[in-house]
Amino acid sequence: MSDNQIRFDDGAAYERMMGVWSRLAGAVFLDWLSPPPGQRWIDVGCGNGAFTDLLAQRCAPAEILGVDPSAGQLNFARSRLDANITRFEQGGAMALPCEDKSFDAAVMALVIFFVPEPAKGVAEMKRVVKPGGVISAYAWDILEPGGFPMWAMQEELRGMAIAPMLPPRAEVSRIDALHALWHDAGLTNIATRDITVARTFEDFEDYWASVEISLGMGPSTREMGVDAKTHLKERLRARIPADAHGRISFTSRANAVSGRVPD
Image (tube, rainbow, N blue to C red; front, side):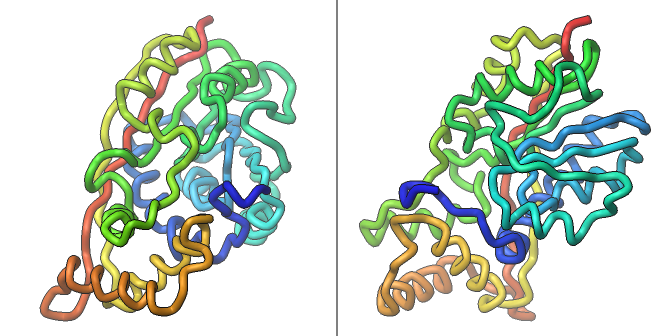
């Protein structure tokens, strides 16, 4: 992995920073999809298995294959999930290690904007899903205010003349861009929706722990000095007020899309 990439190698750290958010949005997403039980799923870019776990708990799947390029994330995923239902393989979204028409459904949870060529990623999901099967995704509305869980951090970094790292294809997070990707892939019955979820941190220090993890994942912030971090922390403390009990709460927004492989 090059130093120009956002790093997601530590499954436990990712769980603290983004896994909770992923499940919050993922629960609404799965309610919206309302898939039938007994399906064979592929979770593309499964990471540490946060969404895979949710899928296993809520949808009574026959099988789930999680695919991700990070060995560290996959090790964490294997430790949390029942091997009788789920299995994991290392691989990339643009070249899935699967046979054609192997699954009933394919999903990308908070992944599509990390795929260097999103259209190839959608085409690969279409390749491995049977005719009539569902292909779906959700992604943070990362270019819009309030869309990304770390949007406040990003805004404050810009105010400090530090460029926050964005996914390589952030533009595909917009709902019209997702619809266009699914349309251009030849999928049918395309539907989209936005998903707004709220998370509460016990106090500012609990929230700041997530921010520090996020800072360590981007090349522009990975080597931030103590003084810069202290300055950022105080700017965020002033920006995000706590309630009477010291808790920090705010919302984030994702965009979702689904479509079917033609019969």
